[in-house]
Every structure is written in C-alpha cells, then in structure tokens.
Image 1: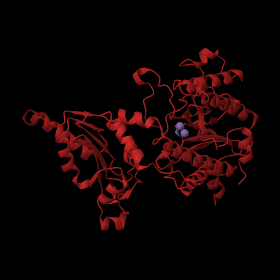
Image 2 (image 1 turned 45 degrees about the vertical axis):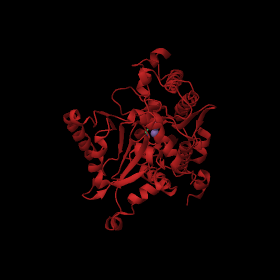
Image 3 (image 1 turned 180 degrees about the vertical axis):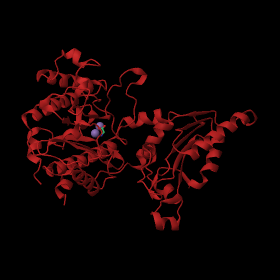
Image 4 (image 1 turned 120 degrees about the vertical axis):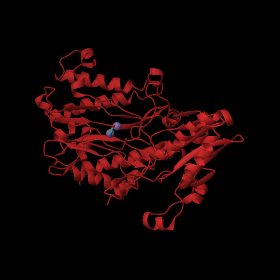
Amino acid sequence: MWEDSLAAIGDEPASISLDEYASRQNRLFGQLKGSDLIIITNPKESVRSNDVHYHFRSSSDMLYLTGWKDPESTFCAYQREGKWIRTLFVQPKDVLKEIWEGRRPGIEGAVEEWPVDEAYSIHDLEEKLSEMLVQCSRVFVKLGVDDTVDKVVENEVKRNSRERQKFGTGPMSIVDPSPLVNELRLRKSESEIALMRHSAKIASQAHIQAMSNTKPGVGEWQLEGIIEGLFKYCNTDGISYPCIIGSGENATILHYNVNNDTCNDGEVILIDAGCEFDGYASDITRSWPVNGKFTPEQAEIYNIVLDAQLAAIDKCRVGNPYDAPHNEARKVLAEGLIRIGVIKQSLDDALSTDGELSNWYMHGTGHWLGLDVHDVGVYRPNDKPRVFEEGMVITVEPGLYFGAWRPDVDCPKKYSNLGIRIEDDVLVTIHGPDVLSRDCPKTIADIEAIVGRA
Ligand code: GLY
Ligand code: MN
Ligand code: MN
C-alpha cells in the first residue's frame, strides 16, 4: 500500500550494538568513584479501564544504557575489586504469565543478550538492592520513578545514619545521576544518528502521505489515521508524541491534539507529527493549504516563516550558541511582519520581551531531540548558553499564529485564523547543519505539487 514510501525510506539501520552500550556505561562509570552505586529504574506500568495496560515504554536512561524495553526492570552497577558489575533485575520467565502477556527474555536471556554481567528476578530487588546499598557510600538514583526503589534506598540511608558508626559502610548521600547521563545523551553517536535519520525519513513520508490525502472535507482524525498507520507500517514504535493536526483556527492552538474537526476549503492545516524508531524520536511540522493552493495572503506568511526557518537552520553550526537559531528566527519573522505592515514598531522594539512579535510568535525555536522528543541536556550550563558541538541534534521550528478567536490581540483580518509552523530536525556537524528531515517538502511549489494528489 505504501511501497513508494518504504522505498524512499530505505533499509532499516542496525540497532545499537552491545559494544556501544558498554562504551556508554564505561563513560558513565569513568565519572564515578569505586564506592558508588548507580541505579536506573523503569517506572511501573500504567493501567486504564480496570486491567488494560497502556503501551509500556522504558525510561530513556534505561534505553540509553542497556536497551532493555520491558517493564518491571531496574539496572544497577557497582564496583568489586576494581571492576564494574552491571546487574539487571527483570521479570523472570513464567509460563503462565507468558501465555497471557507474551514472551519474556527472563534472567538467562538478559545475561546472554543484553549488556550486563548478571541478572536477577525483579522479585529479589529489595533484598539484593539492600545488599548493594550496604556496601556503597554514594547512591546515584533518580527518586520518584519507582516507589519500591525509593523505599529501599530511603530505608538503607536511614539505617546507615544509625549504623555507620558501628560498621563504617553504607550510603551517605543520594545523588541524581541525570546530569551525568544527560551530558552523554546530548552528543549523538554515528549509530544513533543513523536511527534518528531513519526516524525522520519515516516521519517525512508520513507527512507526504497526509499531504497527498488532504482535500476539503477530510477529517483531521483521518489524516491522523494515515500518519499513525504509516508509522506502524514502517516498523516504528509509534508516535513520539501525540499528533497535532489542526486545520484553520485549530492551527493557531500550539498543542491542539483532539484532531476531531473537518478540514475546510480555504483553510491551512498544520500537522506536527513524529515517530520513534528503536527508541529515537523525530519531530516534524508542515503547514499546507487544504485545497492544494496557497492564497497570496497565506503564501506571504508562509514564506516569512520559511525564510526564518532557513536562516535559523543556517545558525546550527559548531561553535554557535544554542539560541542563535532562535534569535535569528525571531529577527527574520519580525522583519517580515514589519515589511507587510502587521508590526508597526521598530525592529528592536518588536523583538523586545513585550514587543509585538510575541503576539504572533510565542514559543521557542527548538529543543534537543533524541530518545525523548524534548530531549535532555542543559541549555545554559552555569547560566551561559551552551555552544553547539558536533553530534548534537536540535529542532528548528519557527511559526506565526493569527488566532482571530483571541481576545488579547487585534488579529489582522487578512491573516485571520492562519497558523503556520515549519519544523525540521537538524544535526550539527563540522560541515554545517545536516537536516535529518530533509525528505519532507517545504517550498510552496513542492507542497502544492503533492497536496490532494492521492
Ligand atoms: N511536537 C512538539 C514540539 O514540536 O515541540
Ligand atoms: Mn513538533
Ligand atoms: Mn519540536
């Protein structure tokens, strides 16, 4: 059905290798002391309708360090005689459970096929974790993810405050490991980039299929069905966030995701949709006319946003501060709106905190992208803007939103209920910006050639 899309996407890249997981772990261990214990835990499964499980997704730190995707699991690592021992607590094999819920790698499978030295049943977590805690002096754990882990860690720390005097061992401090892991996750390896490029190629094809199937009268939900269907067809883990599919005034609501309206002739539709391939997210937005032809007013605004986006992408270069694309996008948007008479202030005034640009452009221009759609990594370490390095991936997503329904602004009639955003996923390389989502059309001519052609 979608053979052309499959052909354009190409072969699936390799998964992350065991060697790469080991090297990620070793880079983390290199920042720890011999008496540290690190714990990465998965959240409990969520349930709806009494006994129906939501689709489980491992925590991104668990995926990053081990690739383990099943629920009820915890990763721990500690040193013995100068060697780091990596342990995974998992659901044990259980024929009855597997008949009902599906296959489990179990303890044996975890040791054989995952990057760990030993594995135990998750049912032994409290006992084994207590033993590990007694022997460590700092425990790196993110509290609030799993109450069993929280309880054991808290108890050991409390007990230790009483008994340390006697035995001289046991945890003295609890440290959040996120800053250490996040710094590693911020710079993507070659294999991560291949997975992210694949994810972006699939999301690009989903947008192309949605464009092709757009015509007056189509439901936003029907385009959502096509997009999510293609994500599944292409062997992804599904959406990386709920699709935003808004036509007409819905396009001026930034996180509109009820997607239950009909697309009407004369409106512009905005679709923000991305998938997860092997855990890695894509995040693409395109905006196009429902009837396949931009009006001159729609084209005027579209081209201002496109100019801003291209100028911002060009700022995604090694050595530039992370907010250079945002500042550039704001400048080009403000210049455009001044040129067409929407903004009557000077450029400096329009760009100031409460200047007129913020009436029509009220969000940031991008965020890190990786295992999470809004990926980890501090933007302003020590309150100075992070400088782009090779291997960082950031989205570039300027927009303009003229919601005529808003009581707080006087919306220009010509552009009434027009919402445009253009979003791509950009890899920073030593050769300049590499747009991972480049297969997704964005010039007016390319878009008009596709809309409604299905
Ligand atoms: N899709 C959410 C975002 O663009 O940040
Ligand atoms: Mn987006
Ligand atoms: Mn985004």
